[in-house]
Amino acid sequence: MLGLGAAATVIPITPVKAAIGDQPPRRPGMPGKRYGMLVDLRKCIGCQACTVSCSIENQAPIGQFRTTVLQYEVNMPDQSQAAMLSLPRLCNHCDTPPCVPVCPVQATFQREDGIVLVDNERCVGCGYCVQACPYDARFINHETQTADKCTFCEHRLEVGLLPACVESCVGGARVIGDLNDKNSEISRRMAENQADVKVLKPGQGTKPHVFYIGLPDEFVDGIDGQASVRLLDI
Image (cartoon, rainbow, N blue to C red):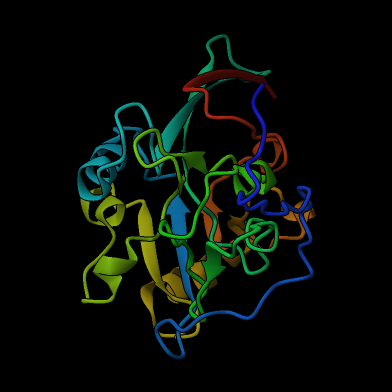
């Protein structure tokens, strides 16, 4: 019969609860900055260069991805043939990330510049953050057995480089920058296209900081999972 030895330590695990409003203090980041990403779907050609470059840069296990481009086959009422929509997906680095407060060991945390990261030395692989994320942007790394996701390539940002996905984007669809700087490219583009800028699942109250231009209204709240091809009737 198997049981706990007398010296065994039992770590209490808090039930999964997306306590969005109960955010712990942010940790230091790049002072004065608030990073966000803008994805212009009018320029995305679905080539998956971002997916490949991210995998090479961050060495995610085969079959697991920090970012990818989902392909949607859309049935348009006024067209005989379905249209295809390419939708890049990644961690939304939310302003009130539900993945942070549910972590029982505080391995998932947010920096002052808005970037959400995982301390793999603390993570116990419980998967609570994976369940709490409404954007299906997290996974348990098959090799490390800890939580994994997009980091905005913060190791590149800190030395003045672009994230791998932005640098490799063939159509220039991805833009990253400081939202606190009104003169940054991302702030300028968002101001120019203010009426067309949308986020995924705004009703979740997470305040995502990955923004989209050209996102059909039907996709705003109707996106789930990581399937590569889906059929959507509009």
